[in-house]
Image 1: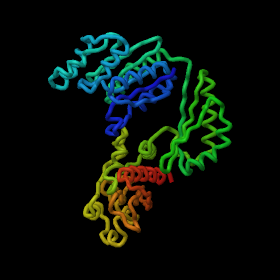
Image 2: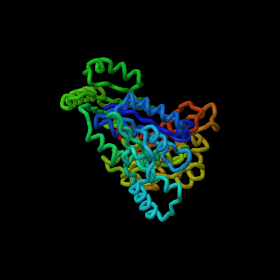
Image 3: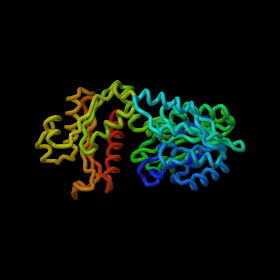
Image 4: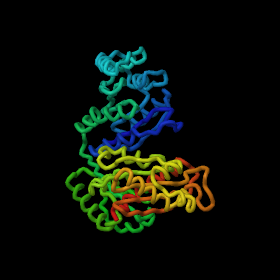
Length: 413
């Protein structure tokens, strides 16, 4: 089954909000044989919604529309879809009852705008939204379906899981899509592609290999498409076996995992605890680790040691070392890592100190320079890296990834 996604919202096109919904939809639908062919982002304009919907309905078997279902005047998706499918707006008592219960639970009073959420097109099937006031809606035309969902991510995700996914599972076609991912290090993208030239050429026509690079790592994704599940499974098994044999120690994860997920898994397997001492990353490393459910079993805490006095007085960094080598140095971050591990009684620790910019750099240590200190079971390791970039946000993001990546390597070694 082929599907297209239409994402509605001016805020997405001006960069105020990042679309995460289309990725969630695709990840959920792929395993049941629904292939997302296109994602279109448009403004909250009636003519643009009509045009996008009509074009998508011609190309795809199913269309999922997100956004524009709020109670304010700029949310026009519901009214526009009602026009497209030739209906009229009617009151849904079930939706009103849901919203009354939701507001009673929150102890809030509903205003007239929120009450208008219970008005729905009479040409749709209402999909209950148990965590929000805007219901989902399903329309049918000429054997094709359109599903309209709220743009609030947690509301959309609940509706996808509870209503949309079961619907697609029931009407699933014979199409099957399997994915298998490996996280690889030690190669540039081009070097890895050259290394795997013969391997790619040997893959059956049902399997394709994709390269998704990030600093220090490459995500290799094998995708199998076809109608014979058993044959696809056998093809994928053989393809992954050969890939694993070729890459061996260069594989740091056999799952489609983030660096923080990989690190936490390594810690869990060894029953190690970890803490962080962060300067330039401002708690970003700790935030990444604690974003993973279950992190509390291994992550003990963090010190955001932005000022030198915190490094000296709280983490026991030698003031003379700072004067001699500078705060962005391997000598300082090693002491920071050891200091926070001792304070928090952890097996491992990560420390960061760098120049995120756009100011503060020098000829010897330009903007984009990061010192990373690692501690594990009495051993320390450090590195000083410069990644030239004028973007503060980009530098901090890279610093965090570098810290996580090198901690994974250090633990494994």
